[in-house]
Length: 267
Image (cartoon, rainbow, N blue to C red):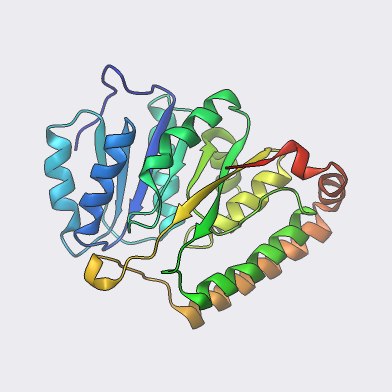
């Protein structure tokens, strides 16, 4: 494991990559991220495929790459929370989260970070631009999740609730996650955006391409359509009840404050 911030690296903003059994693609993603930004931290969430070994070897000679190894797989949100805790302890204020499977565009990291530096109180949310490789079922399914998120936030400007290429301010996100036992698995992305909107964190939307790699290209997906979509439905039921019972004044305020002006989508 290596840590620290070298000359030329940001002292406030880091890239955080959670990974579970991503195979050889993990090393490629880490190299792409490091070519775009420093520092980069990887949270290996109990992987059993050995994909962390090559990254750990790379980190041994790169002071701007750190590997945090977790002994058991606890889920994406739990891995991100572990990274947030370590980042806060090291003095960082923001993280850009990106998936390890090659879906997210490393060449857009700097653009997202620079927007965050100019608006540190905001969360910078990616809005996906799909190519021909995008599975139709997943594209259609996320529209339902986005519709629920708009209802839960009064259309508070989130845009896409599921796209995990984002910059978060660490302090409010850690505080929210410490107050709930949820947000520990792949429900992290939509619930984080909704709860941060309730907490008054302004969303800024930026368009970014997303790609879906085929297995022969190293693509790995742990998403299970039946099980995981049921989990998302349960999550939105929880959030919907909470929006009505606990956050209705905030939702009504978000609905009336012209979110498209306060959080414009940028190309």
